Length: 490
View (spheres, rainbow, N blue to C red):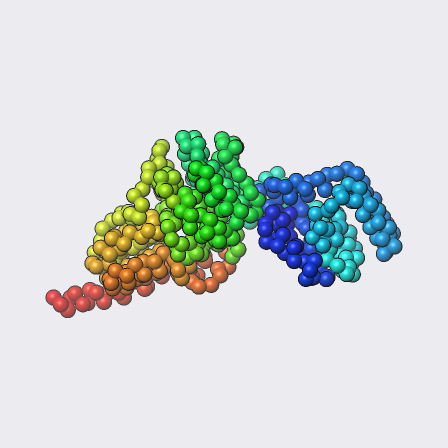
């Protein structure tokens, strides 16, 4: 068995749990530690410093280089045994207790991960080992593509970018992450209680904009989402207002602490879920399609979703005025819609924004899906239907008053959400109507109960029916039926 793990993964508790189990349960295993000093951002913490000391120690480097030359020149088991004895002597002299060997893993390296012949020879030798081993290889993030070497943070993902220059086209419109970072900085300027926590994603979440202004109130805990949430809870008990900024898909790792350490204790922690919804080219591991379902069952958690960047700033302002936990989900990419106000304003909790009134259909467009709700409303108006357009703002608590008011007058309700339909916002609306005893058809537009593949957002939406056309196809028969019934009564 061969397991490959990046050095950033060694800050994660699951990795240490696995290593703790290896010696007792595994006889033959090769763990490849791919060390390039990066995950999404440069690695931080004690483990990263430990790897750096191993790699940069001059005495050990000389011994390693000699070992490499001997293997390449002579090869064979005899040379390897000689090198191994010398290497062990050097390690014993330099580090009395090697971290991995304390876990029962025999340590080899570090070696050049771009030297293919050396890697092949190393694996040939290590496959005959009778105990678990760890091969520490050194690689370079972005190797072979100069723009990626120059901008490691930018090229963590897949682009899009010009393959020749590495440059991306700028729209001039700020991203949600940029608005989040700038708004948090401005709010922290006025409130010394605000602190920011991320799990190895300062650049992706926009906290790299916060860090220079408030370095003592910025914390990167590495790829350790569980710890990030518990750390935030602990700081909240001491009077701080922690913001935990983590991608939606990775916040799943912190679910248990969200329940037991934040919400059960009713602590004022703000969970900011970046990349909520489809994350396009990042693929199935990064799609944030489950956070509504896994969070809305937790008592006491206020859940928000902004329709644009200005509303994101307002929701952040709102969260800092709440006495308990809250979350905001927002997508990757540019923040279309209204420009941000000079000063964000708090929003009434649990109150939706009715953009236009209507009597035939009520369309709820949650967060990033609000533009599709607008398109549907406009197309129906052209067909002679009266369409109400609502920006829900709050997933929890729901604006049940507004939902019931429209449900009693319209032929159908439509919900748009960038989330799986199962357990999502549309499901919450259906549940609320059932509890209120109001019967009205609900057309739910969202992702199906399956993992969504890699691809362009627009193409995937078209494939899975998250479009105005798909909504019309389901809705028009309901509207036509109502017209026929009304005409028959007359």
